[in-house]
Length: 196
Length: 196
DNA sequence: TCAAAACATTGAACTATGACAAGAAATTAA
DNA sequence: TTAATTTCTTGTCATAGTTCAATGTTTTGA
Image (cartoon, rainbow over all chains, first blue to last red; front, side, top):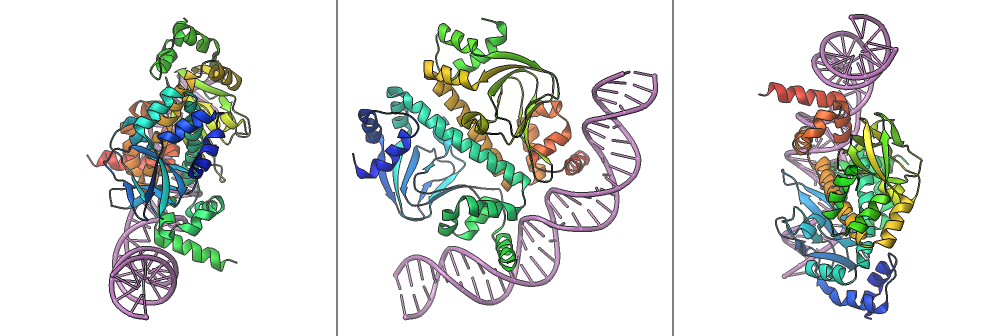
């Protein structure tokens, strides 16, 4: 087993029990890929053909609204998966962009490879179900928060929940994740800073 | 096969191919339940022990923010599933309320029953994965919309996407779904009405 | 090492939306 | 059928957040 696969194999072994052969088959389906900082891995209109597991680096997925503003759906770092799940599963044109924010090392699971995997080892259905389930509850929580809480609370939640991301990504991207302008986030921060 | 099960069985057969015995086993795990309008099926703090498939009726799931305002996560009607997926899968206290908005006929799949089902017929993993996946892409889309679009656009999207729900639920609930006050939705509507 | 680019801050004017209050309309239940 | 309850509307004022423009700061790459 390549050492670079260690973390992803631990990841899937947490969801269900697999034999060494099964794990080896899974690993054999993955493509390793390096991407420089600011590489677009997917653009709006393209069909997303991968789910990417991040060995190293940081990625954002975002969409463009009518006024050309970017809204960030997700930041992803080591041990997270990124994809456009709608585009990937229906094999339809994406509404999202996926862009590296740092130099990245990735493991890609392509669409045909995933189908082959699920056909051969159905137990993987469970792995992906659990992954999507967790993603859904986090997304629901964020949606409710976005609706119910003012920007300052959402920002405080964010830095508490994702302290490492705060260190790694520019502030205006965090604003685009929280759904506020970069200027307003700056004002929130100065207000918080002077209040102590 | 009971006729009341027809629709749910068609539903799961769309996700994967099952034998009659498998379907029969699935049906045998479901509990039928009727609930009057305005019944709370789940309250904050309780552990959600069901995923409910709606044969007839309409349900909302919502949470309460710090100021006691309700924020609606989902409206569900015939052929939809409702649950608190975080509470159900982790068996942890819920942050959500689930309430019938009409008299309902439901099929309940309880936690232990689902585990039994998945243990006995792993193919069902796929059914639930596909369900959760679709739910996730819809929720992501809604989140991005909530952030990027003004209230009027969100309202127009909503009536286009869910015309039948607009007919069935009071307007102030739709406001609570869109993330705006009931008064402001009313103003949007009068503005739209006078603009033609 | 320096210029260019990207990022962050600040202020002023503006806008979408909220909160409150009062009343009208519709629905429900007895 | 009527009273009670729920739902919807309208107006006024308050505010969270935006936009724009100017400036300062940090990072990047040749």
